[in-house]
Length: 119
Image 1: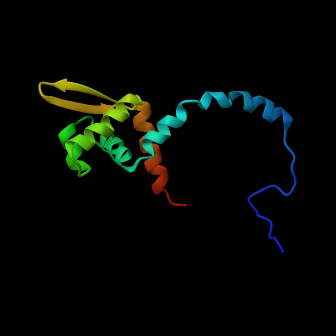
Image 2: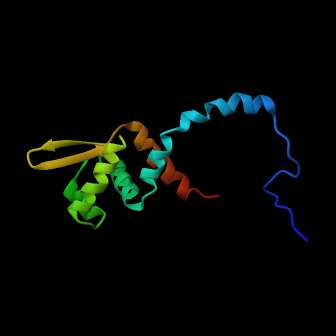
Image 3: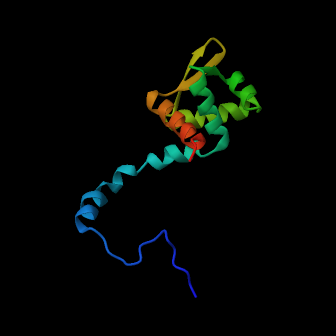
């Protein structure tokens, strides 16, 4: 005997108006998944989180925070920059990274808050 899942409808039906209103907007997510893909890597998420705690960090600081080489930190920072999630500035021989804007800061902060909220 198969037990029916309580997580699905017992019958197939849909609200045609809702579907017609929402379905055309699905193309709006194109490209957005890349943001989540970039942040789904634990190292990059740690870096982004560190950048919510400090306004900016040099590559050497990031490497020490995530306990990696500067090459590894630089690789992940470059990916975050290429995804427009981080930006950088040079000061002499030092390179400082920060989050690209307040939206990225909020995205990471909200994800952290959600992960640790009580059910």
